Image (tube, rainbow, N blue to C red; front, side, top):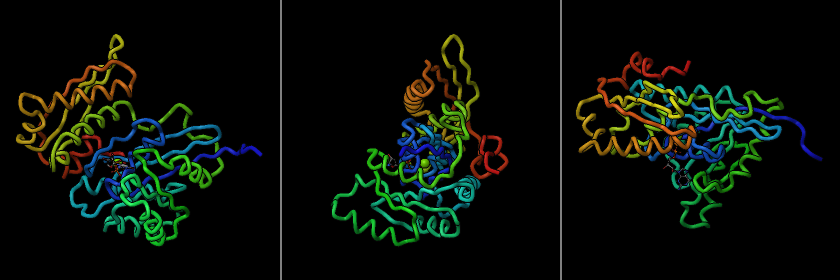
Length: 300
Ligand SMILES: Nc1nc2c(ncn2[C@@H]2O[C@H](COP(=O)(O)OP(=O)(O)O)[C@@H](O)[C@H]2O)c(=O)[nH]1
Ligand SMILES: [Mg+2]
């Protein structure tokens, strides 16, 4: 018998920072919608990634990592973005890193136990496991933390077991026609994705604390004679940070601009001309009003 029932639903991807949530979503979608890096705060917003196939539309919701601490306005914003999504979805993928269960995983676990929504445990980064015989005991240990509807080991980076994961997801979605047009892959604009690509390159290039003190803003985004012209501002909090972002002889900014442009040309399938400016705005990440004006206002 062939399956003819159409299904469509929302699947939240949650977990502490750095476990591979955005990598997982991108790999499933087959393209980079959500930026990734080794640093916390890489994902600051909620981002939809939509996958449409015959009779099935899965709307993934990538979230900022749920973390402890949360004192600044930015931290509060990110925790809120991750938390509010739980009540609105059909399924939650709780992503963890096989090599380490931490206090922050416990925090997410307690949060999930309060919800009615089915939770699937996705044990990521199995490619990093040194001894294969550790796999089963680890699965057993993590499975007992709460009542999960499924427990599945994967490697988001290598793509291992993601087909099985997607088959499992399907059965938890309600019967429904698609909610988004088939060709739409995200709810975010090209403008938003462009500013995120620049932020990804900065996150990956800069050391330690600096990435948390900056944000990016697109000022111009227009196509002229087939070339996409983008001008963007990188906001930092202090003059010393501005110097670091620019780098000696402008080297850092040049590298960031070059790699961002290459990603943008792939993503937007057009030639891109990118201009970057670095400006100082004191204390933006701890000021709700300033954050709103800089685009951090999409959570209600
Ligand atoms: N070895 C390995 N690394 C991974 C895997 N998935 C993600 N990563 C890496 O983990 C880091 C954090 O990934 P990211 O998707 O940004 O995590 P997020 O904060 O949970 O969204 C990045 O450096 C990824 O390349 C995986 O399956 N295996
Ligand atoms: Mg992320």
